[in-house]
Length: 260
Image (tube, rainbow, N blue to C red; front, side, top):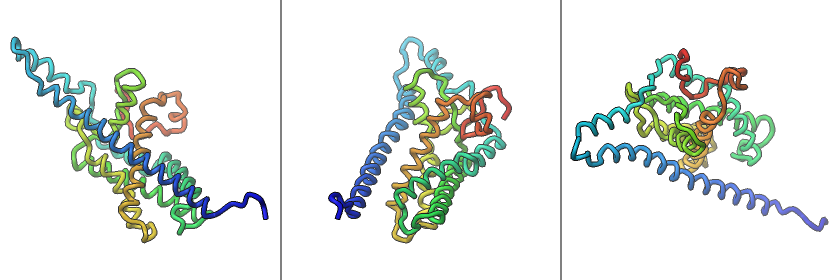
């Protein structure tokens, strides 16, 4: 018998602890993202409710009102929204993302009922692709119902941290109205969990419940935040690799001056 025998029970225990630690980290990030979005939404309200200058209140109102508007904002037409929805739900990004996620789930053998091999990978790929499709359909459908613009707009600011803050905040916010003012987005919050809830109660094994759906929804939420960060920092001009591969139509809005 070899001196260092591998204990299957110990391996399973280590794998479970690793997964639990990762889940705890994900749950810890969710309140942070919500807090950042909340502070961003409340800060303009606090500025608007601050006492006006006693000497010239009319000039204060005149100077603060235009600051709440995004004069460069142009509300996208319905064709642009539909094209971005189709690209987000069924384009190359969700296909590649589903392939990567299925590989991770295959390595963790999750769920174990789907086993290993090509058949197991196919089930996991179909499941992850379905979750992404339901998530994007929910986000864009509810955005239409709430009359929100769910596209991503790159920050006009400069600096790594302001742009990173903008990308993270955009995960939980959207544009509304003709002026494009930013609001907290209920569709953006609900959509990731709608996708995983559909998977859990639609095609996952029966032992999975809402807790598992919420846990998987956290991963979907972080994946979407990562997409926003990539949109903010990765070059997407006419000579970029994304443009050459016709993959420039991620959920970002068209650049100003381009045709929709």
